[in-house]
Image (cartoon, rainbow, N blue to C red; front, side, top):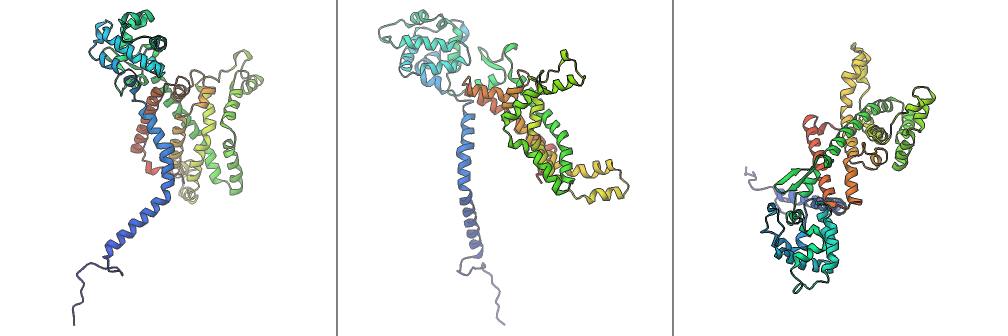
Amino acid sequence: MSDTTQTGPVLAADGTPLKRSLARALRMQKIRALMLIAPLLLFVLLTFILPIADMLFRSVENQIVSETLPRTVVALKDWDASSGETPDEAVYAALAEDMKIAAQAKLHTRVGSRLNYEKPGISSLFRKAGRKVKKWDIENDGPFKEKFLDLHKGWGDPDVWRTIQTYSPKFTNGYFLNAADMQKGADGAEMRPENERIYWTLFKRTLFMSLVITTSCIVLGYPVAWILANLPSKSANLLMILVLLPFWTSLLVRTSAWKVMLQQQGVINDTLVWLGLVADDARLVMINNQFGTIVAMTHILLPFMILPMYSVMQTINPTYLRAAKSLGATNWTSFWRVYFPQSVPGIGAGSILVFILSIGYYITPELVGGTKGVFISNRIAFHISTSLNWGLAAALGAILLAVVLLLYYAYDKIVGIDNVKLG
């Protein structure tokens, strides 16, 4: 009998080793799958990831000072900001040359606006100087220190020059310091005056109110989700339409409706006065405060809590409850020991969804929150659209993103993100 044992690699039909042939086929399958999702990945990259990355880069980018005033920046390197004296003539001469070029290119107001974020009033110095310096003869009109002081006494303020020197590098942590209620002083980072510290207050308020809104959504949404999951399908579908009804109404309309209902002459106060529960001269203040923001946002975000909980509750087998009762458990015990633990993943999914949505809301707090019910997102929107301080807005957004990721990490460690389910 001949020995037919094969000691070499197994071959495919074309003579190629089977292992290599399978690896090539698997690689081609992955490439085809990647080509199918490539348009979506490209779309997400161009419209989501790159804009966010560019915005976050603005939180440390500071090239406008060094690019607009290159000679001044070099001349200021040897100046001692702690001396209390203004720079020498060479620095003023460098500023005159830079300012003339910048004014001709109409860039002097931009660097003035950038430095004005750090020291109010600098913008007007650059704006007024730019109009005059354009007409100077840089080679013959010196000395320039006296000419700048004649234009505005602010050019003799050492703090102005310290600000230019401090923010001359191409990258800065100044925006993040401002976002943390700090500033760059003569001796380094220092806390801002007490009356200028607003951002930590807004951060703490945002986190606290987002947690309260999430909790109120759980308390109100759990019974509704339970009823939806245990009603007959016909009745549950009708009730689901009522749950989804807010999605078909404009967010602005819903927020405006709460503004009408919660005001002191609104529907709720009128009803309480009519019932005799509240005196007419002691109407409740429920608008332009934290209460108004919590009520309006709970109503808006409640469907985002109900839907995940409902989808999980639908998968819970009702025979578990009947089995618990047959073993002697009361209604409460069978619910708390059997049903509720199985619904926790839905609560987790809804909580993450509602918390992340609420922490970034700014339209509703702006309309019903007043000065005491606004979020940090309102300040970010203000710096983007009104003050145009995009660097500070990006720094605030980066800190908010870091806080959310930190909370997400803590939630994953304590609860476990794998236990969160959408159904």
